[in-house]
Length: 62
Image (cartoon, rainbow, N blue to C red):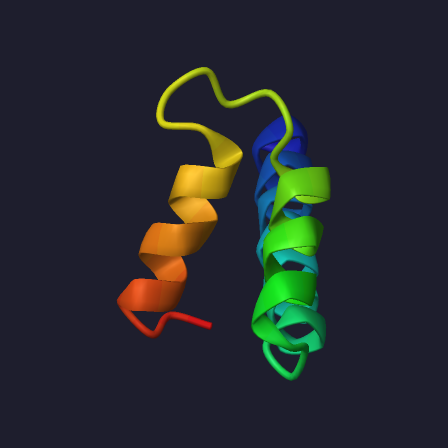
């Protein structure tokens, strides 16, 4: 039970961290958003980080 509680708390902290990052990135200009996403997600093999950023911008996620 103890381990499950810790894992749940860590998962909730990760979600809060991602939400905070999104709140910081959203007000940035489009080119700054792309750079930020590229720094946060540098190791995604396919599609590229740049492509993911462009898709997110085109879908107005940022």
